[in-house]
Each structure stands twice: as C-alpha cells, then as structure tokens.
Length: 96
Image 1 (cartoon, helix red, strand yellow):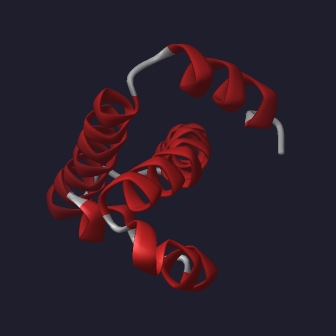
Image 2 (image 1 turned 180 degrees about the horizontal axis):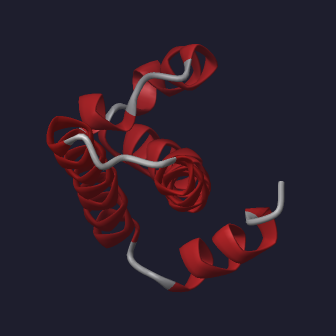
C-alpha cells in the first residue's frame, strides 16, 4: 500500500517491458543475496527486513505494470479470447 502511488506513476511513464525485466532481475538479486548470506551463516534479521522492503517495492511495480501490459497484449494479439483471458488473469509471461 505504501508504494502503490509511486508504482502507478512509474509504470505510467516507463516502458512496461523494461519494468518487467528490472523487477524480475531485482527478485533474482534479492534471492541470490539471501541465499549467499544464509550459506555463509552471516544472515541477520535486518537483512530479511531490508530485502522484504525491496521486494514490496518491486512487487508493486511488477503488479501495476502486469495489469496494463496484460490488457494491452491480450487485446492486441488475441482479441477473440481477450475477455476470457483477462477474466482468468493469465500471467504476463504467457503473453510474450
């Protein structure tokens, strides 16, 4: 909820495919960071808290862009099935 307004403003002004690549890369880096810290045995609570904040921001950008991109891609490339696909809420990766 905290990042929703920021996420909407960023998604409206930026290319949605670029946002997908950036957010997915951020999720990958966060997972690698937590895995490396856990493997080395140096993970602390503040590591988890900071990663959860970055994950919340990335998820806000991803989800906001996902809705816009899904609607645009489905109505353009599959107009016959657009109503059914949008009702189900298919993942954006299925539209690439």
